[in-house]
Length: 201
Ligand SMILES: [Zn+2]
Image (cartoon, rainbow, N blue to C red; front, side):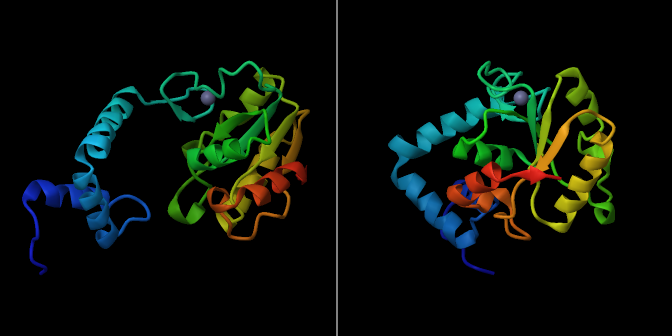
């Protein structure tokens, strides 16, 4: 086992940082050292920001987005077209689409994709509430913006099925999205082209 290089407080900081996506033990150690060196201008404000976020974060009851108010700022924005709903797998995908800024729509965050092998069914994903939301809000277009994975495509077909009896256009992102591609990792040009060139399902 490796020698400990620091006291338990610092080791704990490193261990927690190492749990972040994209950070292994080595980069967690570098990040911890950086934070400790910049104690006043980075470590302290970061700790405050994390505490405030932890206290104030809410899940939007309308769309599943994460924000500090319910409704979230996307749902509460009056300039958005309530007749367009974009279905995404994760909040990260919603944020990726918002970064591109090509849509003035509202969202429906599933929290994942259908995965029969892993026991993830429609009721786990808030899919049950989608047709009701489409009817109640007078939605004219549902844009399916799930990942181009097998589970994502299973989910897309299921959504098309449960909306087929409603008077709503169902579209999907264009094929700029590579197979297996996750929205959050696409560059902004590819993503906005995929939105503009969306096609009927
Ligand atoms: Zn919302």
